[in-house]
Image 1 (tube, protein in one colour):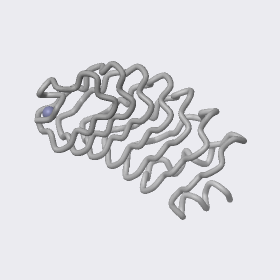
Image 2 (image 1 turned 120 degrees about the vertical axis):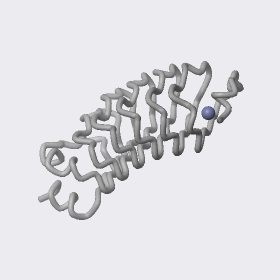
Image 3 (image 1 turned 180 degrees about the horizontal axis):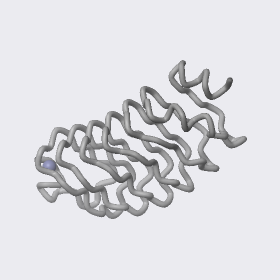
Length: 151
Ligand SMILES: [Zn+2]
């Protein structure tokens, strides 16, 4: 159980949900600025939460789709084995993808200036075609991926 299951999330700007086995869906939460989700094994859906600035998803093996939230600036996805695609979020500035073995691609987002990628095996081949935008200031990729990218 968590504050969303308990229906106690009105007027919150920051919500951290962890170790909830019950939650399946994150609803739209008005006014929410940051949402952290950690180890929710049955979570399937995250609503496209308007106004959300920062989304962190850790260890949610049943999440397939990351919502394309307009205005989202920070997206961190760690250890989510069913995520395949990262949506093309126009305003995204910071993207971190760790231990997502099935992510196959990252979109070419104009505003993006920090990308961290670690242990995402399927991204390897596709990064050959990735052309970072001129605004990209930090691109940290696991060493063997980096060699591919900058060869
Ligand atoms: Zn819960």
